[in-house]
Length: 203
Image 1 (tube, rainbow, N blue to C red):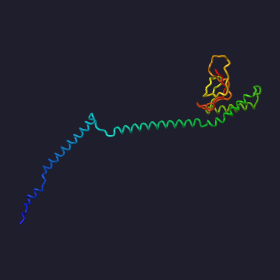
Image 2: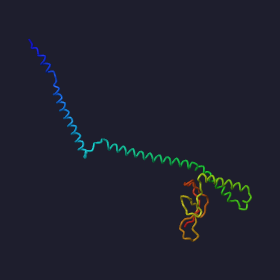
Image 3: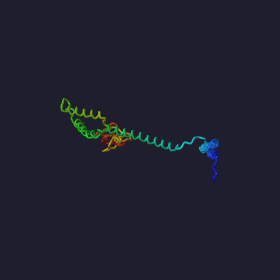
Image 4: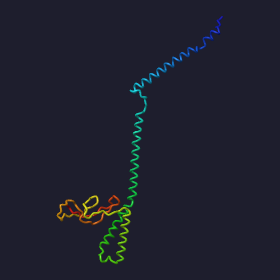
């Protein structure tokens, strides 16, 4: 017959020693803690001065620099578009003003051609003169002003020379000077919309 195992001995073999498992767990944790400490110390040593390792620091600085660059570009773009908008508003009437300048020239020539004796008590002349003055007033309100030319040093930015003459006064002035004005020049604020047509006396 087969031997029947002792049930008490079999039960004793199936039990796990709790004390042994506790000691084994403590040993495992100690090893794990030791390895973790060694890893931290190694990382600190590699960093050079024990500073904590910050992954992506260079990448973050690069992103910040790019963001600041884009922000500055956007600010410049906004200022430029605002300046362009203001210039568009300020000079929106320049096309119409250029078309009215010949009309203004005609009024000035007509008034200049009237003899002085005919100006007195002449309602027609007074009416033409009144219209011319109103037109000049409207131009001034829009920022239009005549360019000073006669007797001024010649400036190619303001004057257009259509004739020349030699300096006949015998002065030592070697500067080119405007001797005569054939057509007035005008500026719209700080922009020349028509240069003055002049005769230049060469120095």
